[in-house]
Length: 150
Image (cartoon, rainbow, N blue to C red):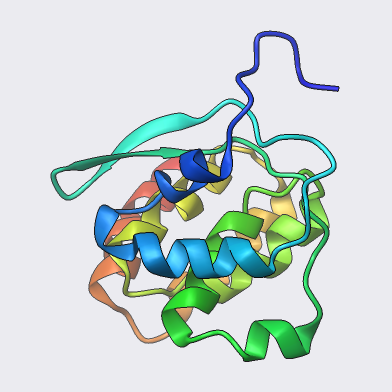
């Protein structure tokens, strides 16, 4: 059930959605995520610093129970929220976006910026709310991008 012209991705491809120094944390997250109903599809490439990453357009895993998420480290939780911000269900995307919109991690920025381009009002409001928190270096960069979109 892939979209026409889409490219199926593997777990290794999902590891490539983050800078290489996070590979072990990404693998830890992927090990607790349920099997996907459909393979992740259509990555888009961006640079985080000087490293190219390929972020999936959509993923299709069911969400994890809260106790499993809480058992992850802080970085692993942020990685999980980034991945689920690409979920096929818009409500799931929004819930996880709210967890990363004010992140100080530069590798979270492309996940948020991509959502700003989807023009879903509730998602844009979540991004704006995340940018309203005490400003961080990342949120200042996002504020400029989001304000240009809205």
